[in-house]
Length: 110
View 1 (cartoon, rainbow, N blue to C red):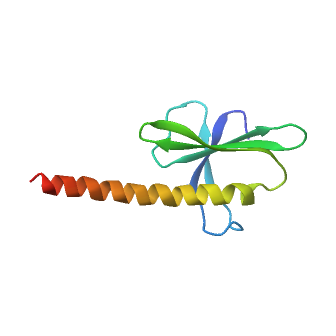
View 2: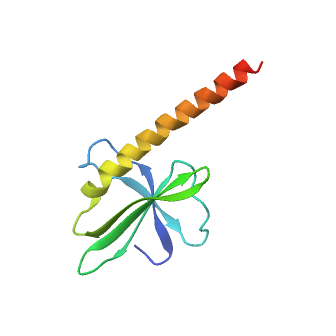
View 3: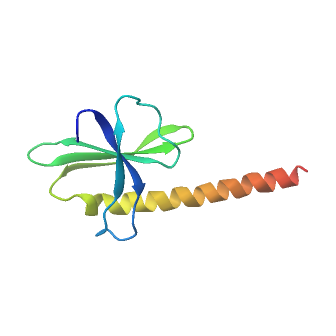
């Protein structure tokens, strides 16, 4: 990971682990909070020749550590994929449910 970046923001996670995860670099220049539902991957050299990978999830209340994968070797996307794919789906479902609840409350208040 280049020194000038904070990590890679996941843009799209395909359903199959063999497909590439689409990302965009996030600069260190503006280390603000993540947009709700966003996942930021970052990595650094670990012990030996492995990589320590972490994922942070943006929520409305702030960013939270989603997962840590210490000491990964080689192409580690197949290890990270299941977690980030499921979290994207869960966040999308919760967003729809939250919007539906807000609408129901709004209509009930009329």
